[in-house]
Image 1 (cartoon, rainbow, N blue to C red):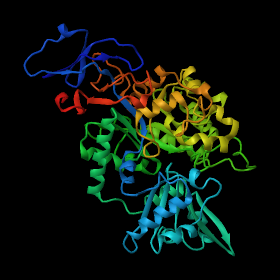
Image 2 (tube, rainbow, N blue to C red):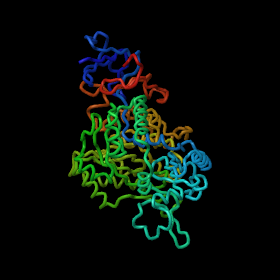
Image 3 (cartoon, rainbow, N blue to C red):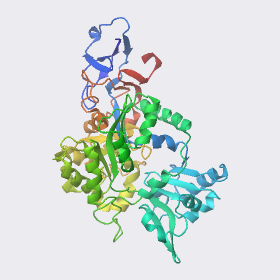
Image 4 (cartoon, one colour):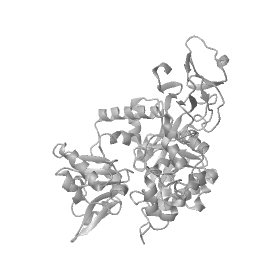
Length: 528
């Protein structure tokens, strides 16, 4: 079998460490030896040698939380991410509507309600004025809500008087009284938003496959070689069909749990060469942007609004018991401090019965002091997305006030021994792992504010941040003890960089090449 020698580099066996070697020898997709000089290269026929020209060679990046198919599907929708006001949103919508056929759905993505309408939710009548006689749905940037016009509500079964249909409505349909009738306002959150997203027309299969291929290429260009995907079972079928080298750990959603049981899917079930099953993903609350994160105390300026809890204790115990008996691990979405406490309470109730189960909290965005130690004690991974700081600094101050001293509490969790795994939550956040590093180190919004960082005591030191985006992320992606270090026997998943990622601004460092199992998936042609 041919060997690959990567030589003349600054080799870091751990992302957070100092230079420990000059090169690496790989064979059969795994690291065989670390090389200290050219004399260690014993070349034979068929071997390949790549001169790294002094670049940094280190473990590749992982992404512990993404929505890969949703990211690809977004390409087929009107992009509202750059709109800075409601007027700008509606101008984009009106221009898009003019180019659509009669009755064709107008689908928008990445509407930032916190930035464009922070003081009130708009209604369906306003959207009607700019969409003519066609159904329209604009999803929020955090995927936890959507704005639908009157024609869209009618086609989704939410039009007219809802008074006698309340029991059959999904939770999260915002309503108002109009005379003797109860009607939908056009804003749907959480379960209601997730349900209608499944009802709108999906993109063409071939178009989706092409979009997915582009996203895989984008991940390789960023040095990402493994991910945890939370788009559910159907998305995993798409990834298997594409036969890409990316290592994917998948999930099933609550409504798909019976399908997973019938298919005998549990932790590590192999769906394709590089696609495996991992978790049951559950939402315990909503998001900051949609004001549906579940809090212990009320939102600032409110006497009663604590957000939205999704499950009662009994419901949560029941569904997670089924998953654990199927040998599925648990990944629980929790933004608010009340949702995070419910997740930790649940894990504590199951830990003795399921000592080897893998528990993780997705986001862990707002915590209470009393809950910080529980992550390490219960062996819970904090799967966090530091780049959300770009958008959540102002919203956090406005909605949570002084509680934000423990928002994104990365340093506090690290000091207490919690395992951190960084992800992007793409398409909600930027996928670039360098941005995750920058946000963890700086804690600032897109304008570089506040100066000195938002609650700077929670800035993560560089070594810990690098561990979270390499070994921590790969471990959360089901590759613990197999990826995230350059040591003999581990996977040949590597990245070549033009500099040390945290020696300066991480965003100034360029990814020069990426290898998965010793095969180059990105880089100069003469390195492949």
